[in-house]
Image: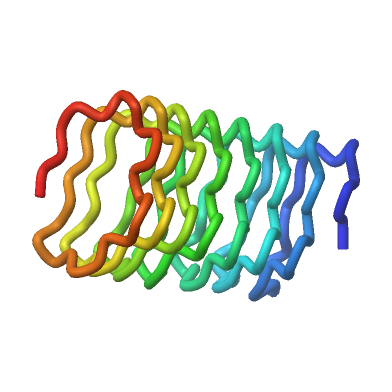
Length: 174
């Protein structure tokens, strides 16, 4: 819909919108501010991919689905609070969000998919809730500032390469 609108700075989404479709704001690299209403329940694939100026986004509590690469390459995004009804974090969802320092993962999450937080080089610590049973390949690869991670006792699957190149990792609590 608005893909590659390079001058777009601010968006207010109307209250009747339920879904932000695939690649809706892809490449809107000047987009700094977006207001997402409570009516939105789904953010589809690549919806905000390469919105490199987006520093902050408040996800509504009504959200239950965040698809593949939804926030991929949002290189200015500093914090993300995943709402309580989201059940899984899809692959590459926050890949290459190099400024991301804080992630809040709710207890509704049961798996962290492939490359979800890959290249999030500003994250220093993360706590994964007890609801998570699986973390898939490369989920935290190249998180070069990650120092501490707390893994839940509910974890039954940790795929290969989950923490590759986490060169600052000093403590793992399992």
